[in-house]
Structures are given as C-alpha cells and as structure tokens.
Amino acid sequence: MTLHVERDGAVTTIIRSRIEARNAMDPKSADALTEALLAFDRDPAQSVAVLWGAGGAFCAGWDLKFVSTALERNHLANLDFPKDGGPVPRGPLGPTRLELSKPVIAAVAGPAVAGGMELALWCDLRVMEASAYFGVYCRRWGVPLIDGGTVRLPRIVGRGRALDIILTGRKVPAEECHRIGLCERLVPDGQSRQAAETLAHEIARFPQQCMRADRCSVWLQEGLSEREGLRAEWENSVRIVALEGANGAARFAAGKGRHGDFADI
Image (cartoon, rainbow, N blue to C red; front, side, top):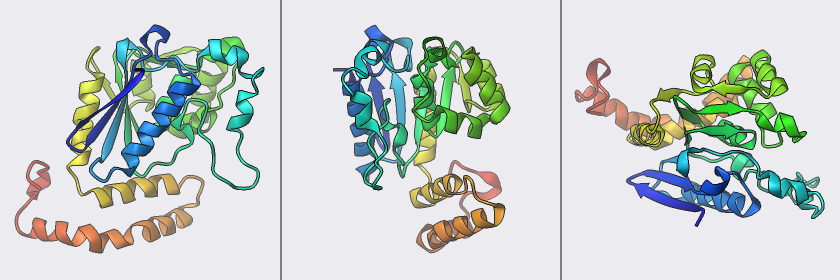
C-alpha cells in the first residue's frame, strides 16, 4: 500500500509511502492521493489535513520512468483542460488542480523537487525540516513545470526569486526557503510531521466557518484590484458574522480570551 490515512480528532494525516522511489508520483499514486484529499474535504468531522512522505522524502516529483513512456501511451492527453468548460481532470501530480474548502499542510522532509515542489506549493502551508530542500530538478531533463509551479511560486516569493529558482533548477535549502517565505515553519530533522500535526490541531480548534471564509478570501483576491478584493472579501465573509461571530463576541464579553489569551476561548 503506497498511501494510507490516519485521523486524530479533526486532523487527517495522509502518508505517501513509495519509499523505493523517494515517493515519486505515478498515475496510480496520483489517483489515490486525489481521492484521499477529496474524501478529507467531504468529511464534516475533519478540519485540517497534513501531507507527509514516509522514508525521509516528501516527493521526488513525477516518476521519470513513467514519463519516458507517457507520450507513447498518450497519457498526457487525458489530463488536458476541457475546451467545453467541463470538469477539470486531476493534475499530473494528483491534487494540484483541486480547490479544497479546507487547509492542507505539507510536512516536508528530504527532497520536494520538480513536481514534488509543485505539490508542496499547492498546500496552504509548508513545514520543512532543516535538511529538506526544494528545487526544479526536472530542469536537467527538459520536463517542464505543469502542476502549477510557474503560477504559485511567483505568487509566494515574487517573480524575480521565482525565476531564479525556475531557470537555474538549483537546490533551495530549507533555511533559504524559510528566509524568502517559501515555507512557514522550519523544524529540526525528523520533526516535520509532528510539527505539522501540532499546527493542524491549533487551526482545527478555532471556529471553522470563519477560518474557512478568511482562507477563501485570501485565494479570491488573487489578481483583483484592492477595491475588487475588498468587495470579494465582504461578499464572501459577511454572513459569517451572524453564523459564528456573534457567538464568539458573546464568549469574549463573558470573559474568555482576554489580553490575547488563545488557551481559553
């Protein structure tokens, strides 16, 4: 079994285990990961997911042994965006075209390179171990980024830094990733999963409709003017004030959470 799912309260941890291939992605693995994430998103008892690779590697990208024959089998044509506006098929790495309603955290150990880097970029947050690294290693083989890397990387670190990483294909160590905003947490080796799950539980304890609305507003404002972004935020989130905000304000008025206390809310 190359993928299994563990649940702890409202947190789902999805574990990929193609250890012999450093968790490189083939079609069967991509289908399994996509379905696991869709199942998480559909489950009302689950709030945050963690994606982790067993064996000390997050994901070494697309399985190049498969890619070498993919064109012969016309496999890539099955992943084309539909011209009639129909359902979008999964990305080559699986979930990279999904728009989930709940956050996903990447727990990155070892390599997250080529498509593996794109998979980590698709996640909302990235927790990296000290020896982990990103890199467009497919630069060496003429395989382009087709799982959102050229779209998401500039939005996270800016166009200049993104081009430096993309054009050179160089290794980007965890410390640099943290410094330029390519990851949000930097932890000692062997602790990425634990740290990501702790972070997931921290997020899962908050009122979830409000959290998801704010998350959605961040995504909605991409490409909009400030005025349009403000309108999108209002239309997306104003209903949450009545659904959850009023109850939260009442708890505060009763004495909860004073002076920035997050422990008793």
